[in-house]
Length: 238
Ligand SMILES: Nc1ncnc2c1ncn2[C@@H]1O[C@H](COP(=O)(O)OP(=O)(O)O)[C@@H](O)[C@H]1O
Ligand SMILES: [Mg+2]
Image (cartoon, rainbow, N blue to C red; front, side):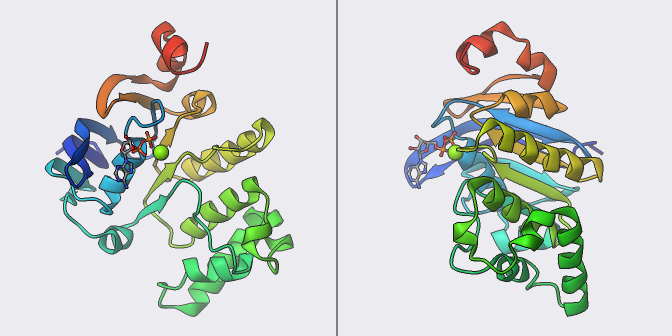
């Protein structure tokens, strides 16, 4: 038995004839925050899309909580408890905040359960309650990202995949975002986060990987990569 909750082993994937991932491997243990950093175009988003089943790997193996998921459909993975928050465009802009959350809970068969989940969200993210009647499209960038995370949390996921949660946000807003991310993790949810802008993510991550041109390049603790001179020079803009 492996201790990994999620295991990606030697995965190849891409778009039609274009291969983007050339044998990528990583693991996420229960309760871990794992971060993948890498330059634009290195395949970070493709990696998450492959894990959730939006793209089928051409080779390799993906396992979640002891079961192979290499070729599952996205809906099946949602049912297994994998939440995926894509980069940008992760809310319905023309629906209100409340309606967005209701959409997130739509697959909860028990409507009382859904109501309770939304009640919990108001307590956790008071800003969303305050804004519950306005169109999600008119929220600030940070609020949209919080809404996307809140919506994903309604189904009580067992693993969250987050694609560039801090993109386009001001530093203070990024801090708030990572505060929420950290809290979710302290409550026991493992997270796999990909980031191009990575300092904050590395500070929080238990372990981290550098992806470059669709291949694993480095792997260490978050702290280790943060202090790695090569990483600082090549990937953290120092
Ligand atoms: N839908 C697509 N069709 C064809 N190529 C794509 C598609 N999406 C991304 N790519 C290509 O795959 C490579 C990796 O992209 P991506 O996974 O988005 O990288 P990252 O998220 O690290 O910036 C890039 O060269 C990109 O041009
Ligand atoms: Mg991306």
